Length: 380
Ligand code: CAA
Image (tube, protein in one colour):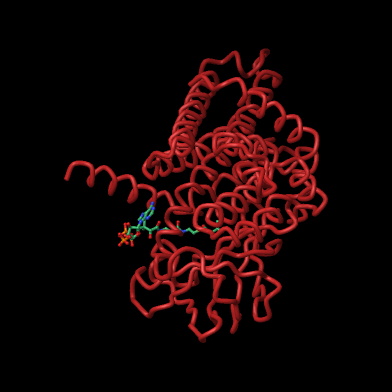
């Protein structure tokens, strides 16, 4: 797929930033388990936190394709930083941009685009993961305000967030039908971080369990229509999944680039490893999976930018790119042998970081459910 020249320029610009500002910090971010606040500020200053926010709301006014390229290029250097951008932009900003009132857009988007307020998406709960519709957080109508009570799990950016998109039931139903969406500021009394998870990968990205204990929000904190919140969540995740696919692609590309460097420089049996056909076949399969992931991601992004339904295509992009990233990073360790298994080399980090892309924003099994439902609907 040949991309318009403007996308090459955007990629070059982000690549330069990623190589000079992000890559040198990646190992430290992984070891210390945090993204420096100065780096988050730089992302904001360079328009990378509000890429598709229209200029009138303080954003860079780009499209979704550009956003996908940004997440890919940043994740190539550091998957933790990549997902901070992705969760903030596609799960925090997009629902406000798409479902928010003019007043909500004016209030939140400029601060989110600049990075002053980082966004997070609070859907999952201890007992509601893949079955998101069974969540039990409740928002009670108290006349002139809402009172929110509940616990949210596995929330990316939970530690950095200034704004949360919170899904809570406003009607007690066993399924998704009673769910509404709210915009909640983390300075609200009653909001707290219960714990930050200690994880296998993306160790610089915060993943938190959050408490909403009698959190009072004004009536106009409702995002979209009351009891139509599940649609807000699902539509938001359609876009979010392209972001995670792009993150997976960036990780896979980094692992592949490293494997190429390593196998062309490592001498065994009197010649570079890359002279061996067995090694070449592995590199060829890695390259093909990366290429196919990229096409699926660009296709889904192009559909989104064209305003066409892209739910199936974003699920396909995430499913294929995340499973490919896991496969490619596994092979990258194999190609680097004992060295690849040590923390001195970056490939073990790519491998650890890749795993989560098969889990968050819908597991691979959930993506298969979405794809199959879409195909079966098409024939009825
Ligand atoms: N866009 C808009 N609306 C949609 C939609 C979409 N893509 N998909 C479904 N809907 C609507 C349907 O139209 C329906 O609404 P109506 O009844 O009003 O018509 C409603 O949603 C229910 O649809 P389904 O019956 O298809 O939904 P379901 O209950 O069978 O659930 C599911 C299907 C795909 C399994 C869904 O529950 C799901 O995606 N689960 C996974 C959730 C997930 O991805 N969680 C990750 C959270 S984010 C995260 O990981 C943390 C983080 O911080 C990054």
